[in-house]
Image (cartoon, rainbow, N blue to C red; front, side, top):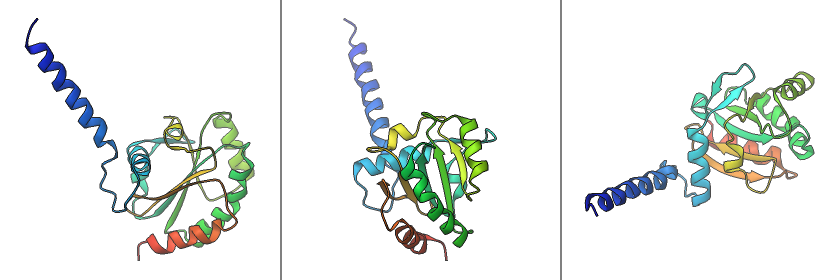
Length: 178
């Protein structure tokens, strides 16, 4: 047996292990759990597609507080928070962005366009063409990820609550650039 082969195999495995392990090492200033740190890294390094088929990344919105909101048109709780988020977007037009990322599980691009035409919310409508949602969503939708002005994850949450407006407003106020 060639003695170089086992050494080469071990070296390859070490490189693979190190590269996979660093996936969540983005130096987020918050003390995130391993799961949240992985979500932070995944969304930061991923791209979505807008309705004109342009690539969109979280980094495109540096300087703004960003809500990445995974949704589908059949999801009542998803749609329940849209008016509240739209009012916050209108209240903080220079500080807050909503990336309404449709999972494309049961909707297609034409469904999203129809929804957008029927509901004039001030959102960036995106398609999850790279299947980011299944990598980061816990339990189901609506699933929201909040990012600060530098693109670091602040928090993640599933579902809706009675105080979505106030919680989101507090996040915007705390993290917007002065």
